Length: 133
Length: 209
Image (cartoon, rainbow over all chains, first blue to last red; front, side):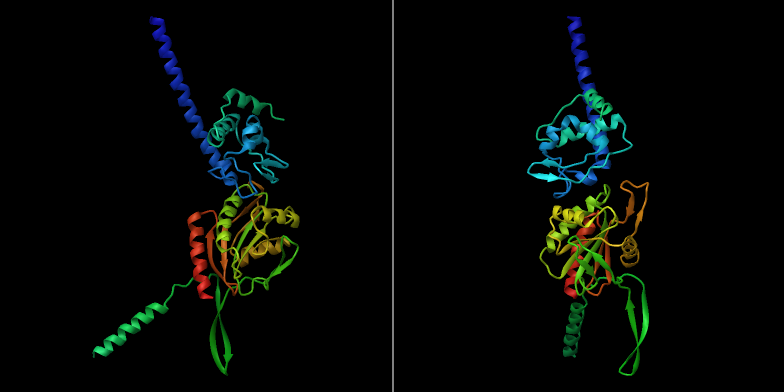
Protein backbone atom coordinates (compact mmCIF):
# COMPACT_ATOMS: atom_id res chain seq x y z
CA UNK A 1 0.00 0.00 0.00
CA UNK A 2 2.74 2.38 1.02
CA UNK A 3 4.68 1.76 -2.13
CA UNK A 4 1.60 2.48 -4.24
CA UNK A 5 1.10 5.83 -2.51
CA UNK A 6 4.75 6.56 -3.07
CA UNK A 7 4.48 5.68 -6.73
CA UNK A 8 1.40 7.86 -7.10
CA UNK A 9 3.19 10.77 -5.51
CA UNK A 10 6.19 10.22 -7.71
CA UNK A 11 3.96 10.09 -10.74
CA UNK A 12 2.23 13.31 -9.75
CA UNK A 13 5.46 15.15 -9.20
CA UNK A 14 7.13 13.88 -12.30
CA UNK A 15 4.07 14.88 -14.29
CA UNK A 16 3.81 18.44 -13.00
CA UNK A 17 7.55 18.83 -13.21
CA UNK A 18 7.78 17.98 -16.87
CA UNK A 19 4.78 20.16 -17.62
CA UNK A 20 6.49 23.03 -15.87
CA UNK A 21 9.59 22.44 -17.95
CA UNK A 22 7.44 22.28 -21.07
CA UNK A 23 5.79 25.60 -20.34
CA UNK A 24 9.12 27.20 -19.63
CA UNK A 25 10.52 25.86 -22.89
CA UNK A 26 7.52 27.01 -24.87
CA UNK A 27 7.73 30.55 -23.56
CA UNK A 28 11.48 30.52 -24.27
CA UNK A 29 10.66 29.24 -27.76
CA UNK A 30 8.07 31.99 -28.19
CA UNK A 31 10.60 34.63 -27.22
CA UNK A 32 13.13 33.24 -29.70
CA UNK A 33 10.48 32.98 -32.39
CA UNK A 34 9.67 36.64 -31.88
CA UNK A 35 13.32 37.63 -32.24
CA UNK A 36 14.47 35.34 -35.04
CA UNK A 37 11.43 34.27 -37.06
CA UNK A 38 8.54 36.71 -36.71
CA UNK A 39 10.03 39.45 -38.91
CA UNK A 40 9.39 37.26 -41.90
CA UNK A 41 6.80 34.69 -40.84
CA UNK A 42 4.96 37.25 -38.63
CA UNK A 43 3.81 36.68 -35.05
CA UNK A 44 0.58 35.06 -36.24
CA UNK A 45 2.46 32.82 -38.68
CA UNK A 46 0.69 34.34 -41.68
CA UNK A 47 3.87 34.95 -43.72
CA UNK A 48 3.95 37.71 -46.33
CA UNK A 49 1.69 37.58 -49.38
CA UNK A 50 3.17 35.07 -51.84
CA UNK A 51 6.71 35.95 -50.91
CA UNK A 52 7.21 34.37 -47.50
CA UNK A 53 5.29 31.16 -46.75
CA UNK A 54 2.88 30.98 -43.83
CA UNK A 55 3.47 28.62 -40.92
CA UNK A 56 -0.11 28.83 -39.73
CA UNK A 57 -1.90 25.61 -40.75
CA UNK A 58 0.85 24.96 -43.25
CA UNK A 59 0.79 21.50 -44.82
CA UNK A 60 4.49 21.89 -45.61
CA UNK A 61 5.28 22.40 -41.93
CA UNK A 62 3.24 19.36 -40.91
CA UNK A 63 4.88 17.16 -43.53
CA UNK A 64 8.38 18.40 -42.72
CA UNK A 65 8.06 18.74 -38.96
CA UNK A 66 10.89 16.31 -38.37
CA UNK A 67 13.28 18.38 -40.49
CA UNK A 68 12.45 21.66 -38.75
CA UNK A 69 15.63 21.77 -36.61
CA UNK A 70 17.74 21.55 -39.78
CA UNK A 71 15.65 24.12 -41.67
CA UNK A 72 16.26 26.58 -38.85
CA UNK A 73 19.93 25.68 -38.58
CA UNK A 74 20.78 25.69 -42.31
CA UNK A 75 18.07 27.81 -43.86
CA UNK A 76 16.16 26.64 -46.90
CA UNK A 77 16.80 27.15 -50.60
CA UNK A 78 14.79 26.20 -53.65
CA UNK A 79 11.13 26.10 -54.49
CA UNK A 80 8.65 24.79 -51.95
CA UNK A 81 4.91 24.36 -52.16
CA UNK A 82 2.63 25.39 -49.31
CA UNK A 83 -1.05 24.81 -49.91
CA UNK A 84 -1.72 25.91 -53.46
CA UNK A 85 1.16 28.44 -53.60
CA UNK A 86 4.81 27.98 -54.40
CA UNK A 87 7.57 30.01 -52.78
CA UNK A 88 11.10 30.59 -54.01
CA UNK A 89 12.70 33.16 -51.70
CA UNK A 90 15.60 31.61 -49.80
CA UNK A 91 15.27 31.41 -46.03
CA UNK A 92 18.53 32.43 -44.34
CA UNK A 93 20.15 30.17 -41.76
CA UNK A 94 19.55 31.43 -38.25
CA UNK A 95 22.97 31.78 -36.72
CA UNK A 96 24.02 32.10 -33.09
CA UNK A 97 21.43 29.65 -31.83
CA UNK A 98 22.33 26.75 -29.55
CA UNK A 99 20.89 23.28 -30.00
CA UNK A 100 18.68 23.97 -26.98
CA UNK A 101 17.40 27.22 -28.54
CA UNK A 102 16.53 25.56 -31.85
CA UNK A 103 14.74 22.78 -29.98
CA UNK A 104 12.65 25.33 -28.07
CA UNK A 105 11.70 27.18 -31.26
CA UNK A 106 10.62 23.87 -32.80
CA UNK A 107 8.51 22.98 -29.77
CA UNK A 108 6.79 26.38 -29.90
CA UNK A 109 6.23 26.40 -33.67
CA UNK A 110 4.95 22.83 -33.74
CA UNK A 111 2.55 23.55 -30.86
CA UNK A 112 1.29 26.85 -32.14
CA UNK A 113 0.83 26.68 -35.90
CA UNK A 114 -0.22 23.24 -37.22
CA UNK A 115 -3.93 22.35 -37.34
CA UNK A 116 -3.23 19.77 -34.66
CA UNK A 117 -0.15 20.35 -32.50
CA UNK A 118 2.78 18.09 -33.34
CA UNK A 119 4.78 16.60 -30.49
CA UNK A 120 8.34 15.49 -31.08
CA UNK A 121 10.53 14.44 -28.17
CA UNK A 122 13.18 16.96 -27.15
CA UNK A 123 15.90 14.35 -27.52
CA UNK A 124 14.82 13.63 -31.10
CA UNK A 125 14.80 17.33 -32.01
CA UNK A 126 18.25 17.82 -30.52
CA UNK A 127 19.61 14.73 -32.18
CA UNK A 128 18.26 15.85 -35.55
CA UNK A 129 19.94 19.21 -35.08
CA UNK A 130 23.23 17.52 -34.27
CA UNK A 131 23.14 15.39 -37.42
CA UNK A 132 21.90 17.96 -39.93
CA UNK A 133 23.45 17.62 -43.38
CA UNK B 1 -24.32 97.31 -33.24
CA UNK B 2 -25.99 93.91 -33.45
CA UNK B 3 -25.10 93.70 -37.13
CA UNK B 4 -21.45 94.19 -36.31
CA UNK B 5 -21.49 91.26 -33.90
CA UNK B 6 -23.17 89.05 -36.46
CA UNK B 7 -20.63 90.07 -39.08
CA UNK B 8 -17.77 89.38 -36.68
CA UNK B 9 -19.18 85.99 -35.79
CA UNK B 10 -19.50 85.12 -39.44
CA UNK B 11 -15.95 86.16 -40.13
CA UNK B 12 -14.78 84.01 -37.26
CA UNK B 13 -16.60 80.99 -38.63
CA UNK B 14 -15.22 81.64 -42.09
CA UNK B 15 -11.73 82.01 -40.74
CA UNK B 16 -12.00 78.76 -38.81
CA UNK B 17 -13.24 76.99 -41.91
CA UNK B 18 -10.49 78.09 -44.22
CA UNK B 19 -7.77 77.16 -41.76
CA UNK B 20 -7.37 73.50 -42.72
CA UNK B 21 -4.67 71.36 -41.23
CA UNK B 22 -1.70 71.25 -43.58
CA UNK B 23 1.21 68.90 -43.58
CA UNK B 24 4.62 70.44 -42.96
CA UNK B 25 7.18 70.67 -45.74
CA UNK B 26 10.36 68.96 -44.62
CA UNK B 27 13.95 69.85 -45.40
CA UNK B 28 15.99 73.02 -45.65
CA UNK B 29 14.46 76.02 -47.28
CA UNK B 30 16.08 79.03 -48.86
CA UNK B 31 14.87 82.53 -49.55
CA UNK B 32 15.25 83.64 -53.14
CA UNK B 33 14.76 87.05 -54.65
CA UNK B 34 12.66 87.21 -57.75
CA UNK B 35 11.70 90.00 -60.07
CA UNK B 36 7.98 89.84 -60.58
CA UNK B 37 6.40 92.67 -62.64
CA UNK B 38 9.52 94.71 -62.16
CA UNK B 39 9.29 94.38 -58.37
CA UNK B 40 11.74 92.50 -56.24
CA UNK B 41 9.96 89.81 -54.21
CA UNK B 42 11.26 87.30 -51.70
CA UNK B 43 10.16 83.77 -52.33
CA UNK B 44 10.68 80.63 -50.27
CA UNK B 45 12.39 77.80 -52.06
CA UNK B 46 11.58 74.41 -50.57
CA UNK B 47 13.81 71.37 -50.68
CA UNK B 48 12.74 68.91 -53.34
CA UNK B 49 13.81 65.42 -54.31
CA UNK B 50 16.51 65.76 -56.97
CA UNK B 51 16.03 64.53 -60.54
CA UNK B 52 16.60 60.80 -60.89
CA UNK B 53 16.72 58.10 -63.50
CA UNK B 54 16.07 54.53 -62.35
CA UNK B 55 14.80 51.31 -63.91
CA UNK B 56 11.66 49.52 -62.79
CA UNK B 57 10.81 45.80 -62.60
CA UNK B 58 9.76 45.80 -66.25
CA UNK B 59 12.98 47.41 -67.47
CA UNK B 60 11.24 50.74 -67.97
CA UNK B 61 13.09 53.97 -67.18
CA UNK B 62 11.48 55.87 -64.32
CA UNK B 63 12.35 59.53 -63.77
CA UNK B 64 11.01 62.60 -62.01
CA UNK B 65 8.64 62.95 -64.98
CA UNK B 66 6.91 59.71 -63.95
CA UNK B 67 5.98 61.15 -60.55
CA UNK B 68 5.19 64.66 -61.78
CA UNK B 69 2.04 65.99 -60.13
CA UNK B 70 1.54 62.77 -58.18
CA UNK B 71 1.67 61.97 -54.51
CA UNK B 72 4.02 59.09 -53.88
CA UNK B 73 5.49 57.00 -51.13
CA UNK B 74 9.14 55.99 -51.32
CA UNK B 75 10.86 53.29 -49.33
CA UNK B 76 14.09 51.30 -49.39
CA UNK B 77 14.55 47.55 -49.12
CA UNK B 78 16.45 44.56 -50.46
CA UNK B 79 14.90 41.29 -51.47
CA UNK B 80 17.03 39.02 -49.30
CA UNK B 81 16.50 41.16 -46.19
CA UNK B 82 15.60 39.07 -43.16
CA UNK B 83 15.09 41.95 -40.73
CA UNK B 84 12.65 44.82 -41.13
CA UNK B 85 11.76 44.57 -44.83
CA UNK B 86 9.06 41.91 -44.54
CA UNK B 87 7.39 43.91 -41.75
CA UNK B 88 7.56 47.05 -43.86
CA UNK B 89 6.18 45.26 -46.88
CA UNK B 90 3.29 43.86 -44.84
CA UNK B 91 2.44 47.44 -43.87
CA UNK B 92 3.01 48.77 -47.39
CA UNK B 93 0.53 46.20 -48.71
CA UNK B 94 -2.07 47.75 -46.38
CA UNK B 95 -1.49 51.22 -47.81
CA UNK B 96 -1.33 49.89 -51.37
CA UNK B 97 -4.62 48.02 -50.98
CA UNK B 98 -6.30 51.21 -49.73
CA UNK B 99 -5.20 53.37 -52.67
CA UNK B 100 -5.15 50.71 -55.37
CA UNK B 101 -6.39 52.20 -58.63
CA UNK B 102 -5.97 55.82 -57.49
CA UNK B 103 -4.13 57.32 -60.47
CA UNK B 104 -2.84 60.25 -58.39
CA UNK B 105 -0.83 58.01 -56.07
CA UNK B 106 2.31 55.98 -56.73
CA UNK B 107 4.52 53.71 -54.63
CA UNK B 108 8.27 53.53 -55.29
CA UNK B 109 10.24 50.81 -53.53
CA UNK B 110 13.98 51.17 -54.14
CA UNK B 111 16.37 48.27 -53.78
CA UNK B 112 19.60 49.08 -51.97
CA UNK B 113 21.20 45.88 -53.24
CA UNK B 114 21.12 46.39 -57.03
CA UNK B 115 23.81 43.76 -57.70
CA UNK B 116 21.64 41.01 -56.24
CA UNK B 117 18.17 42.37 -56.97
CA UNK B 118 18.07 42.06 -60.74
CA UNK B 119 15.17 43.33 -62.82
CA UNK B 120 13.83 39.79 -63.18
CA UNK B 121 14.02 39.26 -59.43
CA UNK B 122 12.23 42.55 -58.77
CA UNK B 123 9.49 41.53 -61.20
CA UNK B 124 8.95 38.28 -59.32
CA UNK B 125 9.09 40.14 -55.99
CA UNK B 126 6.45 42.64 -57.17
CA UNK B 127 4.13 39.95 -58.45
CA UNK B 128 4.41 37.97 -55.24
CA UNK B 129 3.45 41.05 -53.23
CA UNK B 130 0.36 41.50 -55.38
CA UNK B 131 1.56 44.42 -57.52
CA UNK B 132 1.29 44.47 -61.31
CA UNK B 133 4.08 47.04 -61.32
CA UNK B 134 2.20 50.06 -62.61
CA UNK B 135 1.15 51.80 -59.40
CA UNK B 136 3.61 50.13 -57.03
CA UNK B 137 7.01 49.97 -58.71
CA UNK B 138 10.24 48.31 -57.66
CA UNK B 139 13.24 50.34 -58.74
CA UNK B 140 16.90 49.64 -59.27
CA UNK B 141 19.78 51.64 -60.69
CA UNK B 142 23.32 52.76 -60.03
CA UNK B 143 24.17 51.98 -56.43
CA UNK B 144 25.59 55.49 -55.82
CA UNK B 145 22.51 57.16 -57.22
CA UNK B 146 20.16 55.14 -55.03
CA UNK B 147 22.20 55.77 -51.90
CA UNK B 148 22.44 59.48 -52.59
CA UNK B 149 18.74 59.67 -53.37
CA UNK B 150 17.99 57.89 -50.10
CA UNK B 151 20.16 60.14 -48.03
CA UNK B 152 19.74 63.55 -49.63
CA UNK B 153 16.35 63.22 -51.27
CA UNK B 154 14.42 61.20 -48.74
CA UNK B 155 16.43 61.65 -45.53
CA UNK B 156 16.77 57.88 -45.22
CA UNK B 157 19.91 55.92 -44.39
CA UNK B 158 21.11 52.97 -46.44
CA UNK B 159 24.54 51.52 -45.85
CA UNK B 160 26.29 48.22 -46.39
CA UNK B 161 27.12 46.69 -42.99
CA UNK B 162 28.70 43.28 -42.75
CA UNK B 163 27.64 42.91 -39.12
CA UNK B 164 23.97 43.33 -39.92
CA UNK B 165 21.94 40.19 -40.86
CA UNK B 166 21.57 40.38 -44.63
CA UNK B 167 24.53 42.73 -44.95
CA UNK B 168 22.83 46.15 -44.97
CA UNK B 169 21.51 48.62 -42.50
CA UNK B 170 18.74 50.88 -43.70
CA UNK B 171 15.95 52.98 -42.29
CA UNK B 172 12.45 51.57 -42.22
CA UNK B 173 10.85 54.84 -43.24
CA UNK B 174 7.95 55.40 -45.60
CA UNK B 175 8.54 58.81 -47.15
CA UNK B 176 5.51 60.78 -48.27
CA UNK B 177 6.21 63.09 -51.21
CA UNK B 178 3.79 65.61 -52.74
CA UNK B 179 3.14 66.48 -56.39
CA UNK B 180 5.95 69.03 -56.35
CA UNK B 181 8.47 66.49 -55.11
CA UNK B 182 8.58 67.95 -51.62
CA UNK B 183 8.87 65.55 -48.67
CA UNK B 184 5.81 66.02 -46.45
CA UNK B 185 6.24 63.27 -43.91
CA UNK B 186 8.38 60.33 -42.82
CA UNK B 187 6.73 57.39 -41.08
CA UNK B 188 8.14 54.29 -39.44
CA UNK B 189 7.12 51.56 -41.85
CA UNK B 190 7.40 48.86 -39.20
CA UNK B 191 4.89 50.56 -36.90
CA UNK B 192 1.23 49.92 -37.64
CA UNK B 193 0.07 53.10 -35.88
CA UNK B 194 2.46 55.32 -37.81
CA UNK B 195 1.32 53.72 -41.03
CA UNK B 196 -2.29 54.50 -40.03
CA UNK B 197 -1.18 58.12 -39.61
CA UNK B 198 0.48 58.03 -43.03
CA UNK B 199 -2.83 57.07 -44.61
CA UNK B 200 -4.62 59.92 -42.80
CA UNK B 201 -1.93 62.33 -44.00
CA UNK B 202 -2.22 61.03 -47.56
CA UNK B 203 -5.90 61.93 -47.53
CA UNK B 204 -5.00 65.38 -46.21
CA UNK B 205 -2.45 65.82 -48.97
CA UNK B 206 -4.90 64.66 -51.61
CA UNK B 207 -7.28 67.43 -50.56
CA UNK B 208 -4.50 69.97 -50.69
CA UNK B 209 -3.54 69.22 -54.27
